[in-house]
Image (tube, rainbow, N blue to C red; front, side, top):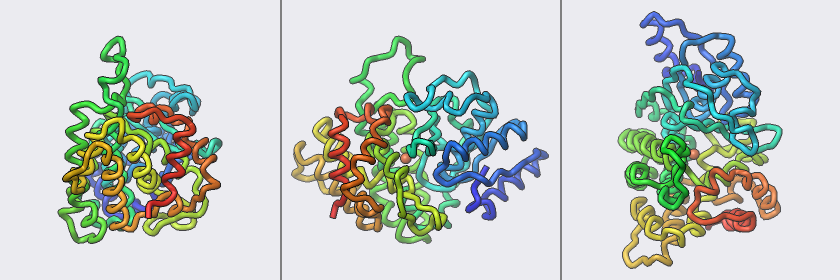
Length: 387
Ligand SMILES: [Fe+2]
């Protein structure tokens, strides 16, 4: 599986050639939609059902990998579409058994989807993003080749790099596992368990790499060292958030991308408005971390320091400002849009953005502070512009 933007590049061709050399029959599906929808998931699932395949290979960014997870699921265990979708929007039913082998080959250094059991899509009828979450969706194998990032457009590197940064910051500051009610048995643990010592390892290293390489990787396509290190950061942050879970910047991003009017940055298919996932996340992040810092100031300060901020003399009450300031300075240095106003929203949109995002309870309940409807509206307000 791949998408139209990639199908004529060397990467899908290399995979197809290798499979044929090994005597394996291959069918190529290139109809994946960038920022997939329920319709595009279903179209891929129909292709998968008709082909009766023994396994799947995804070659692309998060959209391709997520679509491949969904196609694998619905062709293996056919069901009405909403059956496995997260409650309360969907039925939230458990996937009945193992899926077919799926080898994920990411071509962007961002989503970390190759490491997670999460598939995200736009539910067109509700104009909202939601997803399917299950350990069963996790690919059997990920082949991570950083050389694929050498030819990525700089805006794609930018959007995916800030997605990585936010995965790591959100997982590092998520409500820790030790502050939740323990399930009756270990096997009943949710996939997103909150911050824990294992996810902290990936977060800290991903943040340190992002702080060192994000500006270099975006500014200079020939800086292969920087692009390779961002791919490694993406993988580490993917392992971390697949385990700890993201929180409010991602929860808010769903309505930011779902309600898009006319924004479309360079490097993405033109003619159709899109707020790329990483941008729809990072425009919320400085506002959120100012709000969440009082819950765990030490972690917010440590995150800022790992990203390269000078934290000498900073106390607990400065943590939110220091971390937000560091994110904003990296956004400015890489020409990321200036908050929600930079991707086409104004104050009149706050009620719709709030209503669109509020149902993402899985994510907001993973935040270290309670986020009421009023608090969420305030977070969108504070995310309008940063400079
Ligand atoms: Fe993300």
